[in-house]
Length: 397
Ligand code: LMG
Ligand code: NDP
Ligand code: PMR
Figure (cartoon, rainbow, N blue to C red):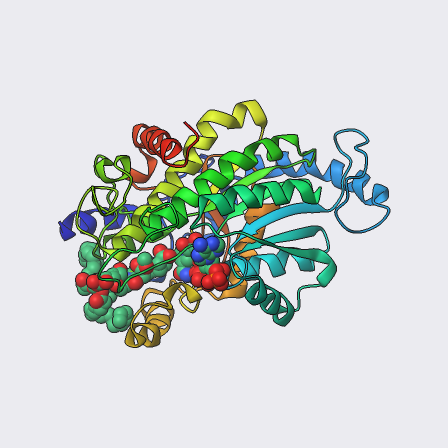
């Protein structure tokens, strides 16, 4: 089994033919080997130039039109009126979400809604990160409760802010749990929070995104290399595998059915990786269903291995001690929170990253490229099934 992955390794460094936008590059950080600069700059250059030109027009007009800072419901004077963008980031109280909030807020061009389960923690985090206070608002959101998700959507609408970009970033990881824990509605916690909570949130907020007059509207769902079995990292056991979704279809309640999507025995690390596969599949299903009709950009990404974040808080102390140096010096996949925040901020706001249906990654020089997902994470039929089963579970169907 492991050798399947070995066979895949050389192809991880396949270089696309020059000029081809549809690259077949895999996560680039395996043992520090990455793409040559030539390939990187060739790749994607055509769409970069096009979209930059289009958007800069809007930006120039915009700067002359903004009268006062802050997100307002100022009357829309034509499609290209530019104002501060408004971005909702879930789980912005630490790690990647906080770093992204900071990176965006500091540009002065974004107002960040930090959607967090712990209000005080978020406030302290924003303050100590030095995020300018006029550029963020904290709103309560507990993704482990669908009622809370619905409440958040109501509160957000009442706040009168437009929704230009939604970033589904929050996650929990329970690598050492022997028994499953559950969300308010009784779904296994990792898939319930990371996938189902975000699934409901993004389905409900799709209407708000549609109504935005911002030049580039985006819905971003954070994925990961460890959910992709076409990489070495994705082959470290336990591997992601959604199977035939029998556990998910029965509600992941751990009572009448398994707490795992594939119906197997509970494994916290696998549940997390499975949830990331659901995140990446959901992004693609959104793209297939709504991109053409709405013009919204749907994207996912692997920001790099941010080995120092709170994600590993439940891992054993030895792991937390060794994991950062292991990633820094052995795999070379390590990235700081600040750097990862800049990467995600790019996916939120960079005019050259408007392509939809894409899973972004970065090479050693921190240049973005379109990466290829594993077979399971790009399986259109599975994406449709995950979508349909999930909408039943969250009460949308
Ligand atoms: C599980 O353990 C836990 O059970 C689970 O609870 C959860 O925590 C989960 O993913 C999280 O992990 C899986 C186990 C995987 O992880 C460990 O226990 C890690 C320690 C393993 C130590 C192995 C020594 C390697 C030396 C590395 C340097 C030390 C720094 C370590 C820092 C991190 C940890 C403390 O680990 C294993 O199963 C070990 C075997 C890993 C092999 C994975 C490779 C996949 C196969 C891919 C084939 C590629 C072939 C390579 C050929 C190369 C040819 C060029
Ligand atoms: P952190 O633990 O630092 O951040 C996770 C955030 O999610 C925290 O703000 C946490 O809130 C929030 N959160 C957890 N549960 C809920 C909930 N029920 N409702 C609302 N918010 C919640 O981890 P990272 O920054 O590393 O993780 C961010 C994203 O990056 C995740 O999607 C993760 O899968 C992804 N990722 C991380 C990688 C890494 O190497 N770290 C690699 C690849 C992807 P609180 O502060 O209250 O705990
Ligand atoms: Mg992994 C080839 C490089 C590589 C990369 C980029 C990652 C990323 N990891 C790599 C390799 C390995 N890891 C190897 C060879 C091992 C065996 C020693 C290994 C082990 C390992 C563990 C035990 N790695 C882990 C864990 C975790 O608990 C993390 C995890 O799986 O969380 C779900 C993790 C990660 N490794 C990564 C990344 C990004 C993670 C963090 C999890 C994520 O968000 O996906």
